[in-house]
Length: 171
Image 1 (cartoon, rainbow, N blue to C red):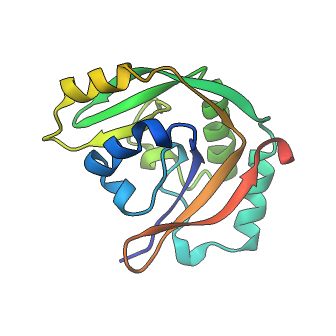
Image 2: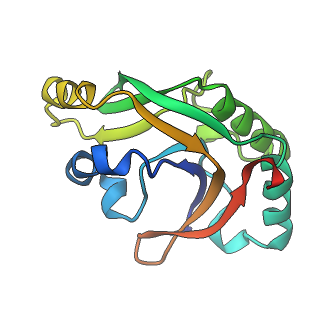
Image 3: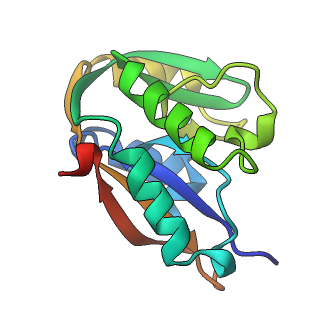
């Protein structure tokens, strides 16, 4: 198994409000992944991460200033319930900057024509989506600030951990 990595913007402001739902319905939560908006996944395989890769990430991330956003609405993909960040421009700018710096690692392996910034709450076909959606709407909006891009890596045991946080705007 090749250990994976990914780049995300953690959303600690959302944890108290969606953490219990994520723990029940999002398998990545049990694997150590915090509430977040993904900016580039999959990324460089974990064994190939080095200082040169990290320097390129830092350079790309430095082109985007920290920004405030709110999780304002609930959306669905097949089997996935998620929260929409608004405005989403900062997330799109981060994805674009990182995809340009690492063209061999397109977002979601190039499977989607458009990358939709989102915070996944449930990723399970058997989730009670209508009930979860109602619960989520009762806590929205969730105000947050993007300050860092986090490089997370998958361990041999399948759990994910933080390797490095890269400050936005080079701060």
